Image 1: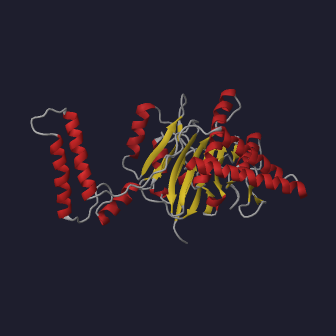
Image 2 (image 1 turned 45 degrees about the vertical axis):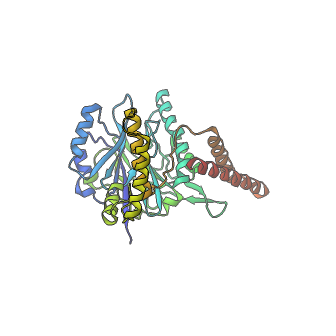
Image 3 (image 1 turned 60 degrees about the horizontal axis):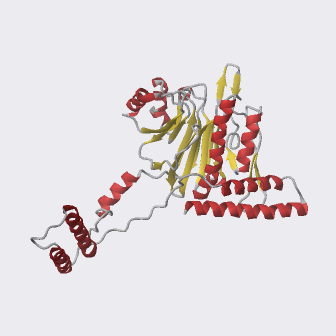
Length: 399
């Protein structure tokens, strides 16, 4: 088998030093990242304690606090992995990072949905759902998507259903689980992910074990979810029950992914510059010294003629023209390496057009499963049209 990296999810309070020590121990070396939902680091004192714990480890922390509440969400990422935060999120229960492998970008999302039905809880969770809708649509147009989280809902053995990329039909992923109960929130989760053509991995490759162990009984409420392209790379989905992995009332959930994550930009750049002598700024090449001397003589002669001895000029202007002349000489005589153009990322809010297009595409997709014959052919035609509209908008947003 080729290279494999792992990513995991566990909900625990890592402000407890014993929990943190366990998560960072050598026994967890086979897990490339750990997703930690509850952080419980508060204020500057909490951050200082967290940084002190991580100082002599192989991990860094990327996270966010939940305003007005204890705790937050975040990623423990192994040092040396190339990553970036692709967007600043509004919802406090949602966080994204971007990593890369040999096939391109992977967007890893972390979600926490609060339990309960109080108005404030519903409002906070709705913010997560709204932002998640936008992010999934955009990130699927840029790469592969995987979402991990504590969703606080039960989906039982409901199936994941997505549209085939090769033909206009649904692909059904049957599920087997120790938890067969389905609640209202679970139905909403499965419908949402089916509408966005994402696969809930628990229970597909092997039976889904309980992820939350409580006095009143266990349940499956922690899920890892992926799009179809990322699903093809997943070799294993596992819920850990070993004693050394138990750090809270939630169990560790991991997947193994085919491939190798890219290294940090700084490390790769250092190796490249050591080999090639550097690729930033002025070119490192042998130059025609006579030609360079002629350029220098000509440019500096013009500068001296403009600022003759005895005439008064402002110091700022003299300095700026001197610097411009110096750079012009270097540009003509030596030249610079061309800097790779970096595309702008998403800035600001998404417009109403993408919402309407996605909503209509999802409606038609559900309709495809309910109708037959000529009526279905008409629905398929409309679905194809709106799917193309969504793709066009997504591509336009990325350019």
